[in-house]
Image (cartoon, rainbow, N blue to C red):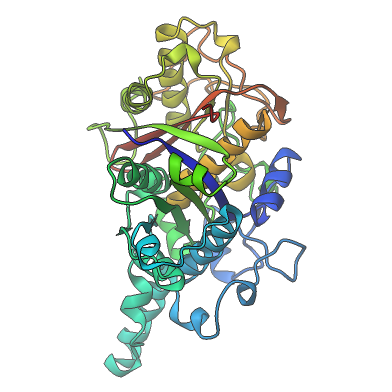
Length: 439
């Protein structure tokens, strides 16, 4: 089977635009969660009034300015999630140094970029306009801006890629599935280079309302937004919606070596599973999460005791974090014969919120950088890991919260093998296994 390595990274996150800005702010313990009260009066009547928003260029260095990334007219043609994808893909491609010029090179290069929800704002606004003013007020760009596969389509058109043009849409597992699918395209010879990841830009009053009605969102810290997202913490009470994009350049190893590309890490395994349990809630024992991680390790031919770090999906929900923690302990403590204190886990969602379809891609990038730099990113707002007393469905077992969750401050740690987890509504799960590149 062909080996696949990571040769480029690109990101747009609530911590800033660009890999360097996002990573440095993550390590510094900064938080991208802000109040929505000033964004629109429509948020004022909602129970959750916070979100992790990509900063604008006028706000601070590293902010979003579409003119820096898009050609003239692209902003009108592309939905915001596609714009973020173009920016992340451009950075990743530049970082990799890969510039396909011949027809053969273009035919061996592709894109796999997905989104969980996509262009929510256009769907809402156009529905309202159509209802009030009729057919002639519907933009001819409405459908092209709406389609989730247009992020990958625009990437291929911008750079002339003629290889696989693919898009996953699997709720909050989208980014991880996109990277895993692209990995397999290369392993099975369909491409030599793939840009892979996810993008999301659906912070909107109706989206907030929908998730709030499902009782998924944090509502307790509206006046202190930076405290809202608290993965693994005993006081966690829901996730914080976020936006952004992450794209990696995956490349067949020999192809990368021939052109002298720098290599961040090797993508060694990909595992998927289904909970077959509930629309939104995982099984309490985390069986689906365990299966995805275990399959990723089997694919990578790596035993559980070799895993040094898990970048958890952990969204800051009572049920989800508890189930994932239980799954990780089953894999690394029970199967891997490790003491809980030797298991290193962290979640980046305290800093960036939950980027939905982009989460798995952005968090994979942070996992890759943890490997590359021997640094574990912190879990913000983690005062005391565990379950709140009396929380229904999350009965706490003795010793099950004894892992190292990297609370609040980054830690130096040599990492040879790491897992990055993503789980989504409908019970869809994925885990990616990354390792330090060794000849």
